[in-house]
Image 1 (tube, rainbow, N blue to C red):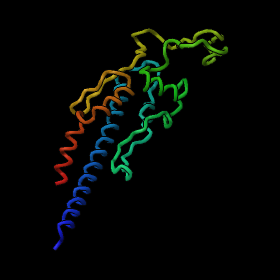
Image 2 (image 1 turned 60 degrees about the vertical axis):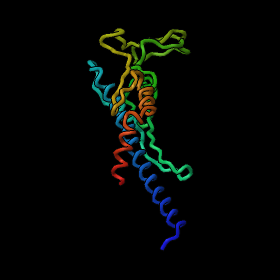
Image 3 (image 1 turned 45 degrees about the vertical axis):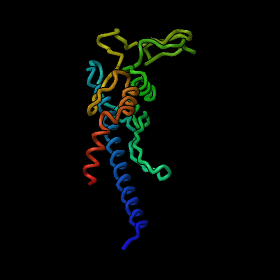
Image 4 (image 1 turned 120 degrees about the vertical axis):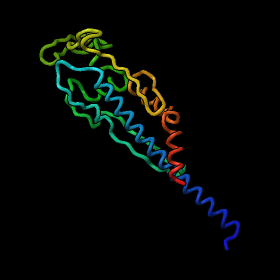
Length: 198
């Protein structure tokens, strides 16, 4: 027969195993929800505008570089992460893929803006037909109006579980969903996972 100390130690170990299993499952659900959020943001980006002058390659889906759930033995927690970057995007744009990603994800700009913010430091000719002089402000030769048909500004909102995100640029929407994940899906995920652990 086990002593009280051994029985208490067994209970502590059982509770630790249950807590670890719950933490791992919750982190895995958070990872799936972050990937889903990313996909919905990009779906909204492509779905909110029908181009008339080019064939889409849907390269922004490749901006989801990686996602994972990792256990930290130091803190004894599980953490879900995603990495979003232009690294895996194809370079078929009229500018660097890093510029395309930054404009869309961080600033909510579809394509290049109407005009540059700083005067040009040197002369150059864009696409062998649009000349610019040093000191000029670069203007977008493809810009066709504030509203129609270019639709240059991109803002979105997504619904995850019970939570509707803010209406903002993609990066801010993702941050909002992460910050409100408990009310979006985290509490219901915990309850569902806890029932399955019994």
